[in-house]
Image 1 (cartoon, helix red, strand yellow):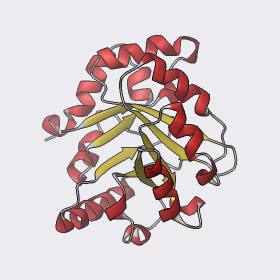
Image 2 (tube, one colour; image 1 turned 180 degrees about the horizontal axis):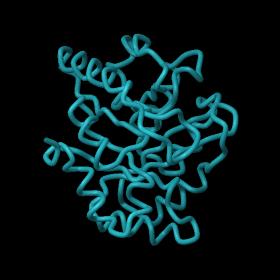
Image 3 (cartoon, helix red, strand yellow; image 1 turned 135 degrees about the vertical axis):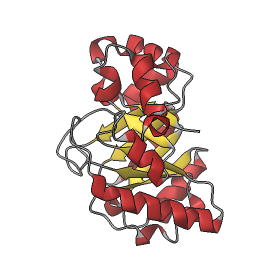
Length: 220
């Protein structure tokens, strides 16, 4: 099943509650929250208070992507705020397994995020302990960037590796996802697609969500 996770980075924050309710009623499977600190990536966005507010207005799982330095220091605040899935970049920590264990301690799903220029061998000893891998198809930091097709072989290779091991791990992709690029990432093996502007900038949220979800069927 293909899951769609609208990224609130592209939502209208002046009416965020309405935006979340709307994507929920239009078929979204989870809500994606991009957390940036201005250090790990060149932008600053939102923190645990936003997650706490979202938890009050939606029953959808909250998928938090920590693009921050020292993510281990912030697992507890984000977990207690209501995050259901917490992704972090292994490049930002000395001991990824310790962060994974910290996330699990709060009963949350741990996920590893991979930048477009990062290799994936470092996930070899960690895949058995996580619930998801997030492949970035743009360099994290700003919305509206162009999709990077060179990441597709990495997604495909990772999918083949976890299938051989019999591991049930979600493969999430974030960056430049729309009805055109979605077909490629689904074909590569992804089952969770993050989309921001393709949904929140459209006139018909439901149609946009469904066109992304069914992109593989439409592709020839």
